[in-house]
Amino acid sequence: MADLFLRLDLQFFAGEKTEKATPKKREDSRKKGQVLKSQDVTAAIVLLSIFIFMFFAAGFIRDHFFVFFRESFTHFIPIKSLDEEQVMLVYISIIKQMAIILLPIMLIAVIASIAANLLQFGLLFTAETLKFDLKKIDPIKGLKRIFSIRAIVELLKSILKISFIGTATTLIVWGNLGQVLDLAFRTPQVTLVTVAKLVGMMGIIASLVLLFISILDFLYQKFDYEKNLKMSKQDIKDESKNMDGDPLIKSRIRQRQREMAMRRMMQEIPEADVVITNPTHFAIALKYDEDQMDSPVVVGKGADFVAQKIKMIAAEHDIVMVENRPLARAMYDEVEIGDRIPEQFFKAIAEVLAYVYRIQKKI
Image (cartoon, rainbow, N blue to C red; front, side, top):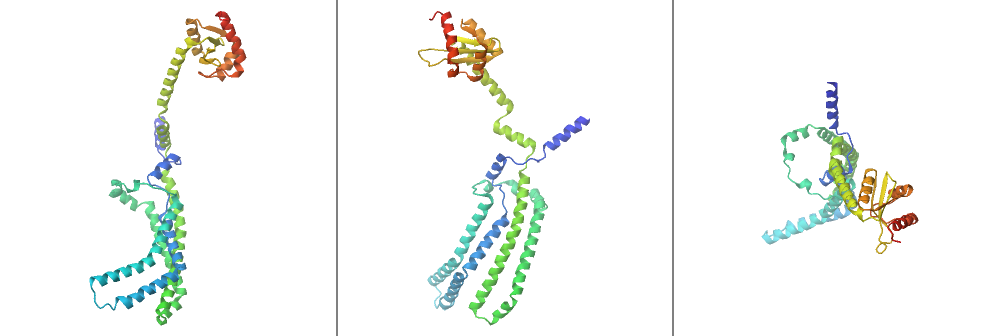
C-alpha cells in the first residue's frame, strides 16, 4: 500500500510545472505572439512622448490654432451663400488646419508605440493572434479571468493610477490657482498659452507617474510570463523526444545501420589480400592493388566475435592471415573501414605484404 501511495505521489508531482522553459518552448510561444510585454509601458511612453513634443512645439501649435480661429471668424462665419461648393471649401480648410496640428502628434504617437514594443520584445510579425478562437469567447474562462489574480492586479493598478495622477494634477492646479483665477481678466492669447502650459505640465507629470507604475507592471508581467511558460519534467522529456526522435526508434535505426554496415563489410572480406590478427581479439582485413592504389585500404575490421567471423571468411577464401598483436591493436584504434593506411604503418604493412607475396609466390 505504501508503494502504491508513493507511485501516486510521484505521478502527481511529475505534472507540476517547476522547470524553466526551454529555448524551444520560448520560441514556440513567441511564434504564437505570446511575448513579455506591458501595455502600460507602451501607453506611458506614448503619452510622455506626445506631451514632450507638445511642450517643445507649443509655439507651432499655438500659431496654427490662432490661424484656425481667425479664419473661422473672418471667412467661414460671414458666408452669405451657403451652397454645396462653399460648404466643401470650409470643410477642406478646417481639415487642412486640423491636420497640420494633429498629424505631427499622431506621428509621434505611432513612432513612440513602435519604439516601446521594440524595446520590450523586439521585432515580431505573427498572424496567430488574429486567428479566430472559440476559447476567447468561452464564458466560463471569462468568469475565471474576472476573478483571477491578474484581475486583482489590474484593479490595484487602476487605483494607483487614479490616486497618483489625481494627486499630482490637484497639486499643480492648486499651486497655480492664482494664475487660473486671473485668466478671466486676460486676453484670449494669454489664456490659451497659460492653459496650454498647465495642461502640458499635468500631462508630463501624469506620464511620468504612469511610467513609474508601468515599470512595476512590467516586473509583474515578467514574473507572470515566466510562471506561465514553466514546464513539467514530463513536458521537457516529451519535447526532447519530439525534437530528437523516440530513443527506442533511434536505437533500432542505429542497430539496423550497424547490421547493414556489417553485411557490406563481410561481402568485401573475400576481396582482401591479408588479414592481420591479434590473434583472438582483433582482425584487420587489408586490400592492396598496386596498379590502382597508392596504399593499402582497410576493407574490414572487428573485435571478438566479429574478428572471429572475419577470420572464418578469410579461411574459406584462402586469404593469408598474419598474427601481429601490436600492429593489429594499433590499426584497430587508428584506422576505420574504407580508410587508406596512414604513413606510420607503411613499414610494418610492407613487411606483412612482402610475407604474403612470398607465400603466394608473387615475388
